[in-house]
Amino acid sequence: MKLNKKKILLLLIILTVAIETITLASAYTGTGFSHNIPISAYEDSSISDILNKYEDTNCIGEKTGICTEVVDGDTIYLDNGDKIRLVGVNTPEKGVEGADTSKYFVEKLCLNREVSIDIDDSKSHDKYGRTLAVVIVDGKNLNEMLLKEGLAEIMYIPPSQFNPNNWAGDNTHSSDYSNSQKNTNTNSEDTGEYIGNVNSMKFHLPTCSALDRMSENNKVSFSSRQSAIDQGYSPCQLCNP
Image (tube, rainbow, N blue to C red):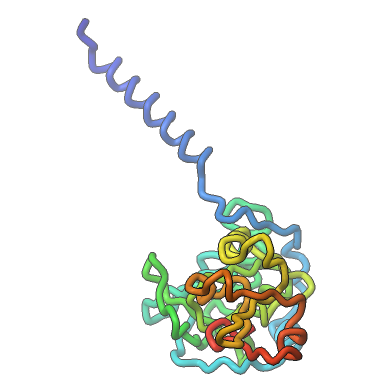
């Protein structure tokens, strides 16, 4: 049976609509992190109001540029063409509750303003070619602010120079990725917050990549950082627990 041009065109239209529907239904939602903080929470706050809530960071700006675009709460463009992915944090994906507020917060602090970046020395770029860095706004750590405001969750992916757990506040959520890393790197007996190595006498975060090379027989768990120190263990220089 021969199909005329109108029928072929109709079939192509139906096929295109079906593909678009499937694509939308399976749209990427990241870890699924969301929050219900409204944009109005920041509309009446000045940049100074927000920045004055935070201490100056000890991160060092290695490069400086003007933020020309805010893609979302954790990705910005600089005028030199660099695409910056804020290291250690993850904000809601576009279309997920809270995405607009996280983006608005970053736009308020960064857009058309000069910012500095402290590039991750352990891993400077992600698989998309984006520069992994802490964004510094007037001496303040933007990554830290997003976590403490509850606008982002921790996404610690070793190796990394920065440990976002050190930036976390009461509102901070830990991503599924971070939790899965903890489950991967520790067995059922390692239920403490910190894992020690009886040979090296170092203690680590459960997400530390050094645990992958550590014998299970050498692992010991501690319920607190102070407990590890009291027993003569010193912090790992890689994960900086």
